[in-house]
Amino acid sequence: MQTQTYTQDARADFDFFIGSWTVTHRRLRERLMGAESWEVFEGTSICRKILDGLGNLEESHFARESGTQQGVAFRLFDTETQLWRIYWADGSRGVLDVPMVGGFEGGRGEFYAHEMSGGKAIFSRFIWTVHTPASCQWEQAYSLDGGATWETNWTMTFTRVE
Image (cartoon, rainbow, N blue to C red; front, side):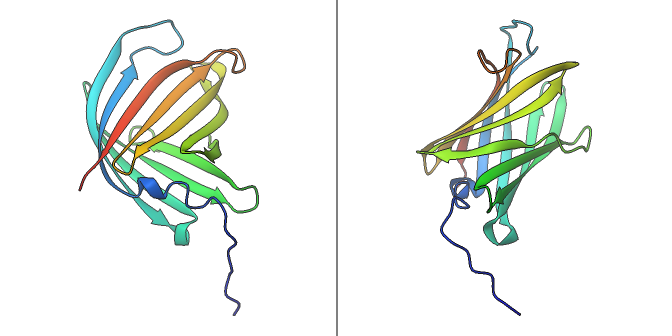
């Protein structure tokens, strides 16, 4: 049996996120409608490595106005393309969403997908920003015009639980 040898690559990009976090969510109540009203709620996330570091699994719990919800993010690193794929499933549907694809440069990650929202074809974008070893931020935005303009509709501010 041969032992797999890995070359240096970007598989460690999400190592900053391994562990337990408290999360402050800010979510636009209506998307792609020019809305300005935000729902703010708290949550928790726990992230651990899987597949010998080729991926990670994040379990999230939210205390939204509509009740407690949960979801899971499943991230996989493609050693061939050197890109990450981020999959999401929430506890209400049990379906993996279209993967967001991208990577990190200088402490900032950008990930993109083509998907449907409210019956409309859109571009979606995630931005991850690492502030310190104990804090980071995630942002989601949608675009109806091929990425010329973006509407940020959800942000999460993470604080590490010691």
